[in-house]
Image (cartoon, rainbow, N blue to C red):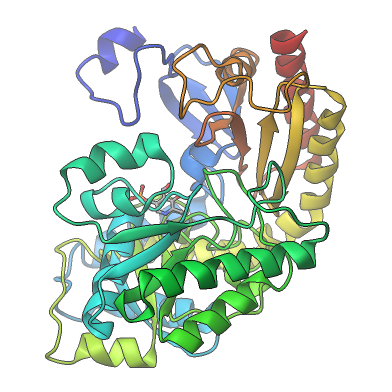
Amino acid sequence: MTEHSAGRVLRHWSSPDDRPIEVTAAEGARVYDSSGTGYLDFISQLYCVNAGHGNSAITDAMADQLDRVQYVSSAKDNDTRSKLADAIADVAPDGLDSVYFAVSGSEANETAIQLAREYTGAKTILTRWRSYHGGTLATGGLTGDPAMRAPLEHHAAATGATKFLPPLDYRSPFDADTPEDLADQAADHLDYVIRNQGPDSIAAILTEPIAGTSGAYTAPPGYFEQVRELCDEYDILLISDEVITGFGRCGDWFGIQTEGVTPDMITFAKGVTSAYAPLAGVIANDALADFVRSDDTYLGQTFGGHPVACAAGLGAMDEYRDGLFANVSDLAPILEEGLRSLERYDAVGDVRGRGFLWAIEFTDPETGEPFIDPRVSDAHNPVDDVIAEAQDRGLLLGSGRPGFQIIISPPFCIDEADIDEAIETLDAAIKATFS
Ligand code: PLP
């Protein structure tokens, strides 16, 4: 049945061994396949259905918009679009007051780097190893993971991207004894990269404040302040990629707000509408917004800021304010405690994250290295088995990049019983895989 009905769809990120379920219905934190089997969706599909499935406040807002006006040119004004821009600017860091709407996270990042390049006259964008910034020709080259980057970069005319090391504290590229030391070492390394690249050639540093699919790693305290200082010292723009972390997944409206730093641009997508319709964008400071409004640049896309998507955005933001964010802050410590209880397995090397975005990294206790590092080996990866075992038991999880880690990213509407069920199921999946 599944194969027959889905046979003509070229699935994204697919490989021959995948056994995806066919989702035909969903409600709250659960999705159902065509045979009626339910799955607890602890990955919010693709880290994006933040409000959970079937939220009628959001679908009603979309239906109202459909009744009034279905599409308005992105070169014209629309009341719903303007209201959403106001609402986003209200919750963004001070000084980031204007919103350019796009359709996907990749396109938001492409717009941000285009703006940065035109505005500064420099070409290079610095991004981190162990990062993901999109699947289009330009953003693929910005991404740290070789499986995602190499096929795109190979064919891109010029990606103009150079990488720097992430401030990881597990299997770290640095040799730091304390988080403060790690922040200093990682910032010194970035300074080294900037000087050797040539500061005048660098338009922007583009970074996720908390890594998403590349492993939910947070930065040590003080790190982003030093990154901001380096940007100021060398006249480099700072762009926070909040495609996953934006709209409450890591606590604040935007992940960078927890770091106490104001970037020059924020890019967003996914959670802005709780994925009820495609919408993305760039929140820009005044200088960059003036640049977009001037005759010096000329940007646009047909579906950027689609009114029905903007209505979904307004509905989702209301729902986040009306209890869903409170639920995330109440339940995040319980989720963390449950995930940390899995550290008792020898194969669980590290548990890390913030809010409702977590990663578990699996490590061979004999070697202290991943069982399989998919960047350099095609051998069978037991971490894929954990995800498959969990799915067979009714729990959906995400695969990290590189795939020696899994990602947990539930919708904000879950309750404590859902967390208990997810941890129990994950526990059973780890046991079945490694013992
Ligand atoms: N940036 C980050 C941090 C992401 O996680 C993603 C997608 O997962 C993107 C950009 C690309 O977004 P999209 O898939 O909507 O193009």
